[in-house]
Image 1 (cartoon, helix red, strand yellow):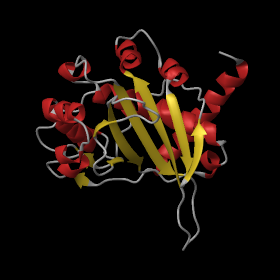
Image 2 (cartoon, rainbow, N blue to C red):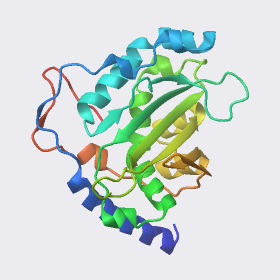
Image 3 (cartoon, rainbow, N blue to C red):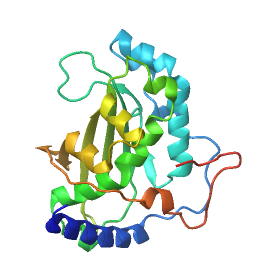
Image 4 (cartoon, rainbow, N blue to C red):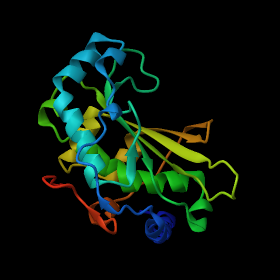
Length: 240
């Protein structure tokens, strides 16, 4: 690892440690069940392959939705965003298990001053690994030869805004082939390698930024952060 990269990681770790303190806090106990409208309904699919995947792995999709809802409550799963979508640029009917989340975090001035690629790298490092692990937790899903890969879409507020102004969100879409994810889950590659081989597309508000090349690192925030005054619903067990 170069001296510049090592310094950047230390800097981002400090900045994100600050931003984690201003996450929206949740009080009380969450509702007993996640909303089912986060999962794309079968009648919305445009191919038999996608419908077969959705029907075969309906239980895994519901478990994914419930797990994020209860165990990562500062992530808001977008409606109709969990499903088997075609990845960007696919020339055939490739199907990736996809999920889009909005990260409910107030931006700090330090974070906002970073370059676009640095903010994207920080969010990739923090969330892509843990979410991929949840998405690939079902063995029957992971070994289904109809599944071609995984897509993680992360969205967050870019910077603080003045009263009356419209907030601007940044978004990255991360596309990973199944073989790459399998190697990562088996411990034979790192989050840094995921970033090297992934296709990552970025948006600044509605403006497409095209492909981004990111340097990522291991970040244990998801496994260690606890929301103040939040209690997991009775009967729910959160696993990393």
